[in-house]
Image (cartoon, rainbow, N blue to C red; front, side):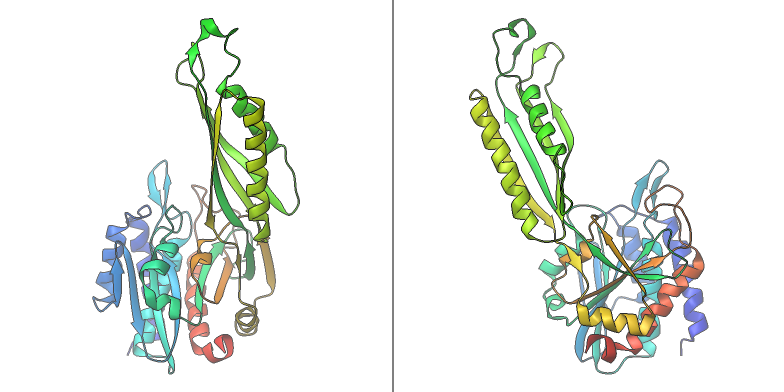
Length: 349
């Protein structure tokens, strides 16, 4: 029988090992093989680097952790907390396998590419049908600046990606006085219109602007790309309509060019299920709420959700090269998984 003390030792063993083999999204082959080596080959589904295990029979739910890391100047590194999430969930699987929860089928989802595109959450949702039958899904993510182990209930924005392409006719610089259409100038007008717009309910911003190919030509092409973000889905349409209008207006102003807009809703907004949120607050003592124009790919899972942020007790920003999660916080994630498992009737309902 696996004892609780042994499980906590495994959490830290797994975390230290995972930090040594950190890999980028969709390239987590050693990480996947490590999970297989520690948990065994009796998984219920695998595709690319994704792995799903299952314990028990009954009401289906799932727990998720992420496989991927982020790139740094010294190579891939878990400056996102994923090695802590992953090690805690691996140990939870081993513990619950010997101490099963009655009345529930618990899927353990080891997800690739939480930090990169395409989203691993979206991939699993589309390719593993059982996930869509789950009554709830749960996950944790570390959060700097909160007290160590402190929990928060988050709300995140949707994110729409957009791209605007401007095509005209490139000419040599000597024809500048005759050429009335400069794709870079047209792009600069669009950039001004987009990035000067301010609204408290949603954000629209072009973060990339490029064009031309050589310094002695009037640019024939330019491209802008960026995001629309907000909490209410209606602002997705408002943002898209705004982009369509300014593109149409500038097309009329410069008939010698072609302006095309690509708009893609790439990440849904996120908010926990009300009943699950209430249950988590009772069981885990969640006291804080957090709201951000940031995004969370856990939103891609088409089920009721219980996703919590857990404080690191440190000042290092998430994704900074010196970010790390103290062992005590990693163990706290494991403890929280067990509390959720033992109180599913209260939380899921």
